[in-house]
Length: 141
Image (cartoon, rainbow, N blue to C red):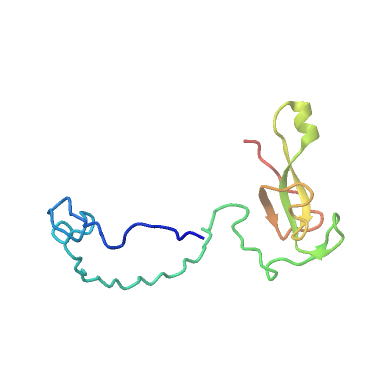
């Protein structure tokens, strides 16, 4: 079997720099063109302390201004879900009357604090801690 002949290792190519015309390096690694990097001092910045913000709802002059704790209202049996809880009168859109009048009509509906947003969500609490026979008036805007 014949031995593979390769390039002669006796004759080596010399590399000539394109920037300084020196031998042994190219222009990418030229010491004159690219001086060695010196380390810059690193500034140490202390992290700022972040304090968590507490979500605080503003007090309003509205029917919902009372926080509505169990101390201010007594629980009654709810006609919708049959549970004993604090009763709430909420503003709900009356779809049947709205269709007849061709404008949005709202009514007050008695619910408890557990079924307050079921089945249709309410957008405003008119009375918190209502009595079972209480009726709330809704002013047309």
